[in-house]
Image (cartoon, rainbow, N blue to C red; front, side, top):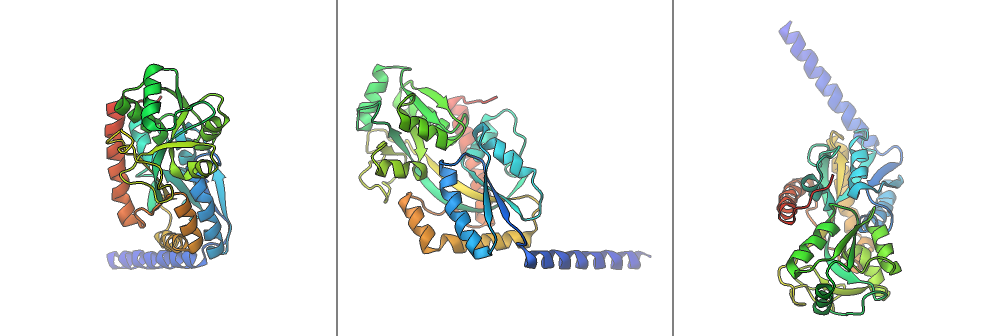
Length: 325
């Protein structure tokens, strides 16, 4: 009986493996949803849309971007985490999701348990941008002087409480010794629109990907890059250290995850297709225009990277005493 049971289990395993292999070969049989946890117009969306367009061509099936903004990117993450594990829902998250575990008291998802890492598709430095409609200072030192003379009167926009924009702003306050007021929004897109309007906020600590077009158009003034080196896309903009604020470095990254439990064969295909898309001349051009570079491009490299980012931002959140209900 034991031998028969063992044989039955082995046969079941073989059939299951065969079914999974066949399923993977037939995939995709319909449109694929990419959950983008921020509104259109922000950095995550700026990279998700062109990537989806290229992947749609390669796979022969449409990639539908589902923008689910709210709660600093956590609303969309929770929705994606509860999606079927069938290879038809993926998640385009960002550095915000590595920050969230340290600043939110309660999350309805676990970045490391509910998702399977696939690839970091873009890494961009953050840039300190002001609106000329409200701020006339054109360099970082002058802006810091203005902020010191007007404690609490200047405002900075963020994609929401607990996001990288928020932490970057709090780090700036500590590093520069200034008091500026945080104005959270439901995503980088709405935050940027508020900044561009010149009605309420003065400055934003934004990922270069979403600010680039507005800098080129003269609608935003870049004061400094929060990176070790200058951006090839904007070589005239000094680093924070060059502008008089040494040690102020913040990068934003965007990454692709599958729902945990999605068949490995399908995820392997997605990783391969994503690498192919990122190597295309079209995406290379778009990435370069936004000052982006590639990050850890496969699951084995991305998993430890995300873990290290979670640990890094936990220290920052504790130092800045940031906690979101």
